[in-house]
Length: 118
Image (cartoon, rainbow, N blue to C red; front, side, top):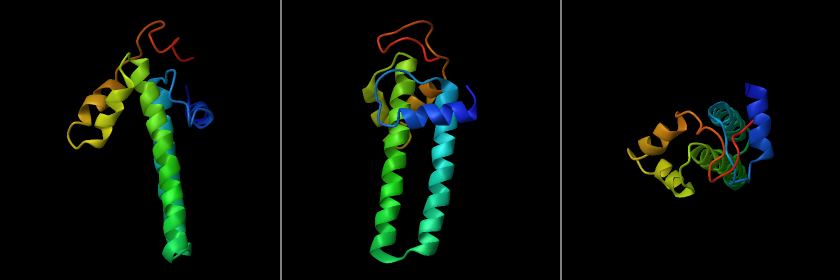
């Protein structure tokens, strides 16, 4: 899966916390979200000030947060791990556990979370 395909798949599944996401889909989509957030937050901070700027920044951050959590949950499903493991992403030093799973190869064939990603 290439960059464009991964970003398209991530956007289409932005609120989908079921199913599976391959390694390339996860990493390309996370990279795209981070870059888009940095650019948008920079533009917002340069153009807007005060409450409206803070509100726009929060909306950009919240959408990016949901997008990354959804693809992270689907990535954990791809290696056969539970959704609850995604909580560890937000605990300092312990985030290495889900990071370890995010670089593992997909579990072969179907697992409890569905067929392998295409």
